[in-house]
Image 1 (tube, rainbow, N blue to C red):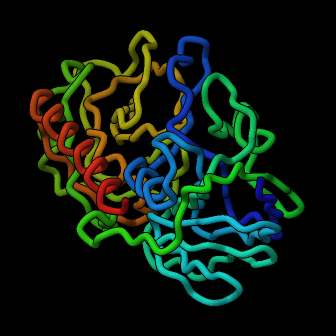
Image 2: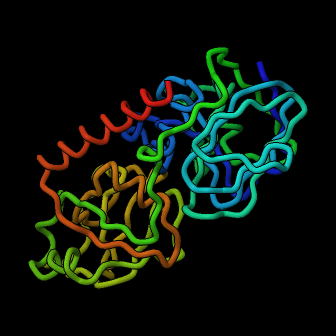
Length: 314
C-alpha cells in the first residue's frame, strides 16, 4: 500500500471511474469521468486494467505528498504537472519516490486532467463504482472533492512501470472549437422543421459560463418547438441535448438528473462527448447530424482506438 497525503485539493478533484451503471431507475446518477478517452489513456500508461478509478482534476490540480513509491501518469488537459517542482511530461508514466510531492501549475489547454496511479485507489465501492457523486455525497473520498488534510492509499500494482510514453497519434486532441456529431431523437418530432435545421445550420453555439459535471448550457440560435417543451419525464443519457422552453440547448453530462421533463432533440456520440468535456466557457461548437448506424460504426472505431492505444504502451 502507498499512502498519499493531500496538501491542497485543487479546485475540484474527485475520484472517478466509468460510473454507476444500472442505478438510474433508483434515482442515482451515474457520475463517472467526463472525458472517457483521456481516462482510458491514463490507466493504459500506468498498467491498470480498464475501469480502474483515477483522480479527475478540473482546471487547477491538487498538491499531493507521497509517503511511499508509486507510478503515476497524467493525461487530458495540460495542467503543467511537476514532481518536486520539476516539470514532467503529459502522457508519460513516472515513478514518484517516497517523500516526493506532485503538484500542478498553469492550465495550458483543456478543462479536465486525469491522474492515474499504478494500482487501485483504496476507497469504498458503492453500487459497483468508486465514482464520486457530490450532489448525493456518495462514492469516492467521503462523497466529496479532495481537500487539504485528506489521506488515501493506493494498492500498488507491481507491474506498473515508469518510462511508458504514449505515441502522439493517440493523444487526446483538445480544441476550443469542435464539430460535434449528433444522432437525432428521441423527441426530434417535437420540433419544427426550421428548429431542426437551426441545430445544424445556424452557425454553431457558444458554451456559456453555466458549465459543470451536470450539464453544459449553450448560447446561439433558439430551437422552435411545435407546441411546448414539456414531455412526460423519461430517462436521460450522457450527451443528450435537452431543449427547454427558451429553445437553448443543454448538453447533459455525467452528473445529470436521472430523468428529465424537457424534449431531447438528439444525443452526442461517445467520442465527441470527450471533446466537449475539455471545452470551457466561450469555446464554440457546431453540431452535425449522424445516422444511428454510422454512430455505431464510429463507436466501434473509438473502442478500437482505445485498444490500440493500450497496446502501444505495453
